[in-house]
Image 1 (cartoon, helix red, strand yellow):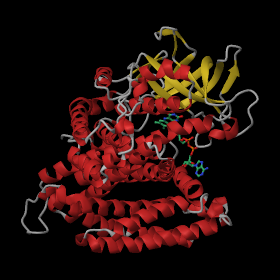
Image 2 (cartoon, helix red, strand yellow; image 1 turned 90 degrees about the horizontal axis):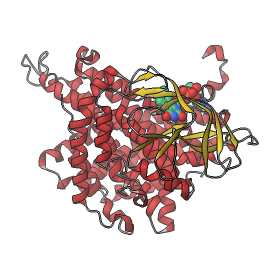
Image 3 (tube, protein in one colour; image 1 turned 45 degrees about the vertical axis):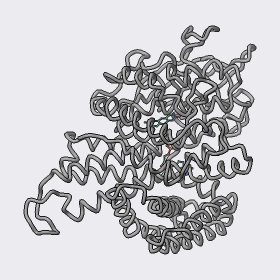
Image 4 (cartoon, protein in one colour; image 1 turned 180 degrees about the horizontal axis):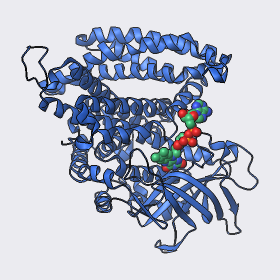
Length: 584
Ligand SMILES: Cc1cc2nc3c(=O)[nH]c(=O)nc-3n(C[C@H](O)[C@H](O)[C@H](O)COP(=O)(O)OP(=O)(O)OC[C@H]3O[C@@H](n4cnc5c(N)ncnc54)[C@H](O)[C@@H]3O)c2cc1C
């Protein structure tokens, strides 16, 4: 089965749905770019994903990573593919041009990332962590650290890793114990054990740059006492070459359900030399620069795997002959003729295509947040990024896994066995609901910090944008617009109630957080479907019909899910806390 990156759909989103170049008209860095260039990048990204990464995906899963001594070896072919990835300039596609990055918009980068995740999720995690580490270094490190590390990392010669989790400290980073003792020369000695570190050790890059959360000796307890440190695997000589080995080593790697070609390492820091990034005790805030980038990246893991699952299931459904066609009653029908198979395939596509649209919208706001010259545009964009990030992370990865599961179901028993590869997509997708902050934590973040804390200011701004689209919708799509308008009113009322009740009973509001997030996400999905329909006249006749079919399915069968989410939230969650633990 083949993977074909959805380049046409991606180009349509950039150019016709969001017209990103128009949005970026005041951003100097993007003025030399145009849609021809974006299309060329998408085409090249597609070739690399389809021809280099996808063929390695299955063997990488079979072989996995290997730990020997303190070394970790990636599966056969990964090192060479990584070399090609770096030579193609893919690592620095969205990186700072001052340090050798290409400075292309995030709105384009997310689409390339989706292809990379679809074709080989394990491989893609290594450069994803590097890109996230670069953004934290660029935003918060001293010029000296930036000069020493950024260029090598943005070219991929050195990779990055994110070291937060400890055996007793997962979602609750406030209790982490790793120590940072200051030295007279301004450096620190880092001591502690981090677990589950993606790409903490591997054989593809010449150096690995760990961004580590640790505590200074006099730090206050809790999250306000955490600082961020850069700890290289090899110290760097004055001339920029790799020098002596630092005291950071991989103790073991995890054996896990999926992403088997991605190394998940226990990392031991034994008085390893580190350099502080940002002010003392403000490390968590600095690390959030990286974590927010990673949350969007992991969202794309969900979309990419859901798309490859759809593609394989769609191809299989046309070939597999089974039973009698419901439409024509003839025997020997391909399974795509059966209602339930059609339902599953359309569920997958209608969610994947609207999630892809949301990833571009979110990324476009990141571009405006980072580069807009107008202060108000910058501020509004940053608020929108904060609101949309937990929604994208949780919704793309939850629906991503569900869609991978649909993929297995379409293939029946042949989906459950190894032969066709769809079971790997589901195994690879499952972790995305857990790491980078579990989806339960994302939903709490949405309710507590992004909606209730500002009394709904930003989400009301989003609702106003939806209203604006609805009042300008093409006549041909008015019935969808009317339906969405009803759902918008209902989600607005739910939001008002949530905010009103939050102060009195925050725990109960958090009980409904996941359902609230889903209600908002399905609403946004409907909005972005209308935006796609409004722009669809530029597409070929077949593509227009496919857009309309997926949108019609979304409005008929998926948007109504909002009603049940609202009902469940309205029913309240106080009962969860009234029950004794033994009744749970
Ligand atoms: C393959 C893999 C790769 C990883 N890569 C990295 C990496 O590169 N760097 C890194 O630092 N970490 C990494 N992690 C760790 C990952 O981020 C954590 O596993 C995750 O944050 C959850 O922490 P935990 O596993 O300790 O679960 P716990 O925090 O123990 O959570 C268990 C359950 O309790 C719930 N829960 C916990 N606290 C709350 C709360 N306050 N409110 C509501 N529910 C709550 C959670 O949602 C979850 O359902 C990785 C993990 C894996 C498995």
